Amino acid sequence: MTVDATQDVLVSAQRVLETGEGLTEAEVLAVLQLADDQIPTLLEVAHQVRMRWCGPEVEVEGIVSVKTGGCPEDCHFCSQSGLFPSPVRAAWLDIPGLVDAAVQTAATGATEFCIVAAVRGPDAKLMAQMREAVIAIRAAVDINVAASLGILTREQVEDLKEMGIHRYNHNLETARSYFPNVVTTHTWDERWDTLEMIRDSGMEVCCGGIVGMGESVEQRAEFAAQLAALAPHEVPLNFLNPRPGTPFADLPVMESADALRTIAAFRLAMPRTILRYAGGRELTLGDPGTRDGLLGGINAVIVGNYLTTLGRTADSDLALLDELNMPIKALSDTL
Ligand code: SF4
Image 1 (cartoon, rainbow, N blue to C red):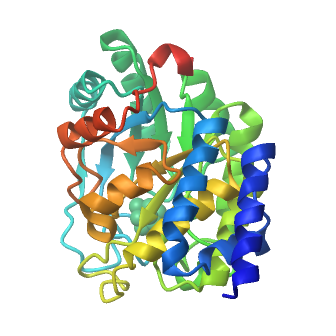
Image 2 (image 1 turned 120 degrees about the vertical axis):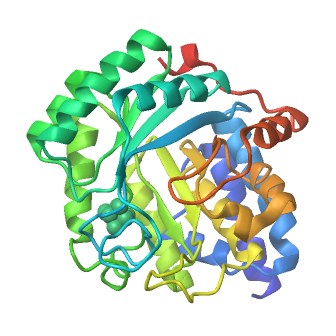
């Protein structure tokens, strides 16, 4: 990239800082193409954007799997698909198990507790279990309950809203143009339709995806622009952790410089969103990179373990936030 082009990128980032309006797709692409020696400057401006438009608080969330493994879909990154020989056993968690996980999550200071199921979409049994779980969790602990149960019907959207589900997660996973390389059992548009229904219902929309799945840099920029068009409340950003037995098992781990450029680019595309570290950051970024990302646009974390892989311990994440003077967002701020 020429000196002039680099200067243009930094000028557009400065514009985001001043106006709170995100970068265009072409501008995101230019950010993703910045030279390595520009990354510290890029992260600094992305951090300023986060501080100005979101503030210093970090939103902490715990996730629990109510139904693990045996999913009929074929998302090529996912060890919970029943179509691949991944070593993940199918399992269901009962209501006391969910309540226990919610209590433990709240004890870390987290304000969000997300119940996740490895399904194409929920059936009547899962919806009934969700209803029971939300009531039991509410009785035991003060925490927002979110859900991630796949593709929904309009009736299910209304039911979840009425149960008091605060936020619904449904990831677009990748750019529309790359999606057929990642999933063949359902379409990007089916996911988009669910997201629009969630948004229309008044539940908060949580929608992100995974980078490092073999998509081009142009497709990464396309994905950022598509997410920005949806304007989700939260964007969980995963870096591919190639899981044994999945079709993506042999893909290389993303370079940490690319991961940091992506964090900053997503922040500059969506200055006001909650940008959450989700899976894969330990592998892609390690400890120093994790810190760089928190000082480069990230303002939310998942504590504890992910669905099928181990994360950093809650204590080490909370200690890092403390060291960086980033307070945990209080529950009262989110209600
Ligand atoms: S990502 Fe979700 S829908 Fe896709 S295979 Fe995994 S559990 Fe199933």
